[in-house]
Length: 261
Ligand SMILES: Cc1cc2nc3c(=O)[nH]c(=O)nc-3n(C[C@H](O)[C@H](O)[C@H](O)COP(=O)(O)OP(=O)(O)OC[C@H]3O[C@@H](n4cnc5c(N)ncnc54)[C@H](O)[C@@H]3O)c2cc1C
Image 1 (cartoon, rainbow, N blue to C red):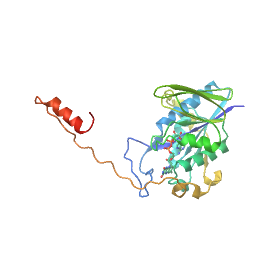
Image 2 (cartoon, protein in one colour):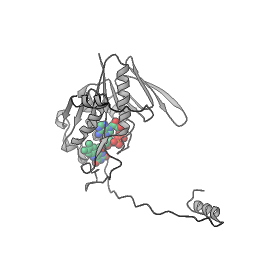
Image 3 (tube, helix red, strand yellow):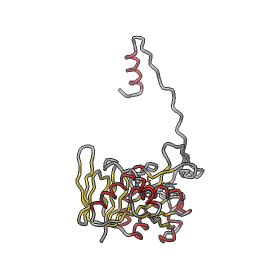
Image 4 (cartoon, helix red, strand yellow):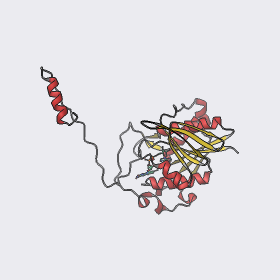
């Protein structure tokens, strides 16, 4: 049977744009352009490489996000994924990582899977915990933060690099895997890939399709809350030390004053 790979990809606000919080302290996603999280491109790339090595594979890309999140799915499809699932529902507004992981788990179970691939973190929330929570919800092993990954004979294997040592890990499928930005450059979509992506199927699901009640997600179902948010103060001009023979001393005094030395 062909290997079923699901890649979780997130549509995130463009970090080069002006980002704001809405009045309810959720991220204002309407007023800013978005894109496929750069860190999730690595997960799509690894899925494509695993599929190339497998004796038959199908890659489904999955996102939980607003209408525009389809753009992230199209990009992943143009890189080479086969089909997409988009979960969208007004009641998702304000959903935290617990709610997002619940929705993803239900959608993954509905789609069917052998391997779930995630990025190491999203570029907006940056919690980096979703893959672990997802594995717990699915009741399968997690092999996270891999810089090298392969799938052979019902087993996923990979290398996790730490500051002082590397670990070689493996788990029986089905399993959840997350990959780092060291796992290998993501390919650019080719013109042929972009044209082919327009015809690939994108399934739309809402909460009722997944048997999830509105109270389980959204701000109401969130386990975490944002109490306040403030704009970062503008940068100050800094301190300029003019060297008139005493520059080195002044510099040392400044650094000592800041407790750097
Ligand atoms: C419309 C909407 C409103 C939201 N409002 C809030 C809010 O107010 N407060 C809040 O805390 N969260 C909110 N979220 C959820 C939030 O954006 C994150 O998806 C969630 O909290 C996970 O945190 P993270 O991105 O830091 O996960 P990380 O653990 O950093 O992500 C790791 C990996 O998990 C996968 N992943 C993460 N999110 C998604 C996703 N949405 N779809 C598919 N794959 C994903 C990716 O592979 C990613 O690389 C909202 C989401 C949506 C769609």
